[in-house]
Length: 216
Length: 340
Image (cartoon, rainbow over all chains, first blue to last red; front, side, top):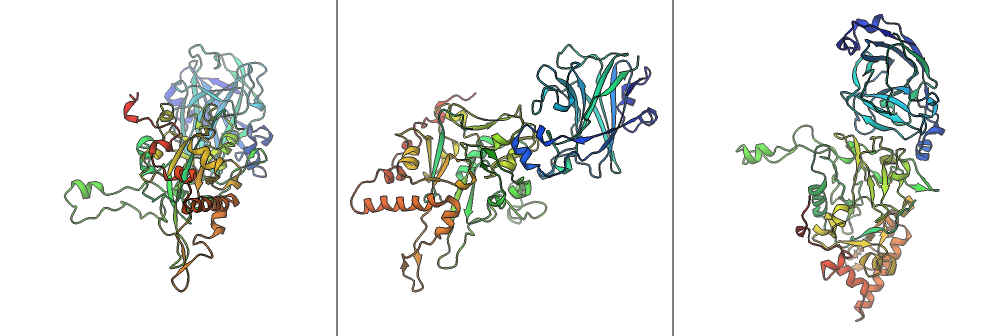
């Protein structure tokens, strides 16, 4: 997919999930699948979820725009119920993440590995802002920082629209990916259907990287 | 899974518990006063038989068998009981104390952490109840530790206390499903799971846990399980008067109970009927397994020794002539410590 270069579009418009910008830009449908139970780092989680469906969100529509400074991803998916919080403990907030490889051989299927990590941008319903996470294998996620990610979301008539954005260049940090117009990298997506108890490794994700070209 | 070089433990003598909740209030005052912890009671006291808190916790699954944490239900905020709002201002500071009584504001609650207090079971004149204080059992095989995919829960090597690392916790609550005692809460403000920490900052300074120190009934004994001069070793290992709750859950709790003997049963003629206990053996066995019945026999044996004019070290420990003897050396006055 391509992150379209719109040098004149300001951040406010990019951060509006319902804006005409996101109606007009080219979108791609990614098919998501439930994370295999064998990959869950806790045998308890494997046993507790055996025979249950995971990865409730089957498809996500994705688009990306940058203005040379800020890169924004727009995700849209069907979800009959909005789950903005933890309810009575029996549900979890809906959530989504954008994954970017830190190395050529960062493998999305395992959520990265030590020395071959993944930089994830994370949104969770009900929380303003987002966070950057370093993934180096199942159960390993570490929050790197919580200042650089901007998020905006709206749930209307059974559908989430979420924007997750970050400045392309950020203060030097080996655990995050530096971006620039003209660059080629890859992207992955994960969605958690909180109303069905999805959290942690229980989620829907794009199994393989999608090529991502940042238009120059 | 143990991983601990030594294990701190607690014994509670249920024959002494008067259900005053001082332990729960001491804990609440010490640890769970802040936002997000309003409905959190790391220590609870429930009337048994009863549904307890969270409601029906004994049938919610979880546990540790075959070297693995077992599936269980998620305890809900409603099951634990929400923190009720009261009309304090109206009654105490707005001059309506003579007209309005203290009451819950808003929808009438239908459950709480001590909802079935003093109900018990049985029929007159042989109805029965007793109080069961509960906290995290700091298990030898903690299902919570095994269930967490983020390794956010640690069993401390130095004292076996099980603690949640809130920096690692992502609020997934697998621990709450796996814990068969359902003594882990979720802090909705901080979005992390929280539970009893066995007052480790106090213990590290030689001070007993708040629930133990404040207990007016001298119910709670404290100390390292392997301290042969301490009360835990004597009551659990040497004299076998104290046993874990629901040992069949498989987690090997480190909180032990001296089971309740209950009052004498009355026969139809109104006289004492010694042929059977008032609290049914079946119920003691349900809570404590066969070891619970054996503990009661052991207790009776010690009583017989004293009634025969002999001396029982076990009963002396239970009587607790000096409160300092109850805490295995953790008897420092907290007022002598400058807390930071």
